Image (cartoon, rainbow, N blue to C red):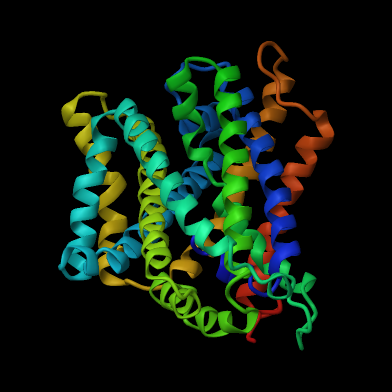
Length: 380
């Protein structure tokens, strides 16, 4: 969420919102496809067991590497960003702040899914309050000509939308938690409703956030933020320079911290459960400790060694995530349907399976083209 304004600055308001809507629809459907594929298996299984059973060890290895890479790189991005935001609040340097962040909030993941559920409710309430306060402060000052970039010297928007798709995909990348939700609710239909509700709420938050930021910060002022990699330690000061209210600035920082924390524990839970299934760690104190170490220590070490590149990391996550958020769900559900159609079934039939698969391929290709400098990047 925090990287979306920088990622969408070139595409600006309408194209950015359209990219988010299309991505949300595809990612909801692909999550439902995973639930359909999981329905034949024990309630606690994850990608590892299902993919290995359907496609063998080769495809399973590729999928497992992709799942862990994306989960790890997202955790790295959240830990790094927390290390940027926390120091002014707690008076410690960024590295110590990052370590404390992982130890304290990673403990909820170690404890249980229920603990994550409870703290997530608290965080969502806090996010909602800080979001409302900050958005109210921003919304009352929205400049409509600025929001729609009237009179811009650079009126082209659509070409810049292409490079945004990997970031948008990563913004809806909950799929590593689909198995956790299925286990929590005990069956697929309740989990599918939770997925739909979650993606809809997230989409609304994203669009309101984007509109509020773009309506207050001129498009050309994003150029130095993008040049700096889109990191929050550049974006937040840039926002502060155009928002003439300390209270609103404080609310935005509080919301940013809550958003990072809720994402951190959500992604952490999905990776935790995935690794527990992959390594067959027991669900006792010793087993959960092993899962916790495998989940959080590698991204923490990377964050301490390479504390930059928030938006770049999210882009890589989005590109690789296409494997297990679009490509593999489509293949798994196709194989599952070949074996029978009993129980929960994702809508859309064969056409939607093909569309989700091709969408994943397209997003991965777009990211490769962007890395090669073949896509337009907004520079003011």
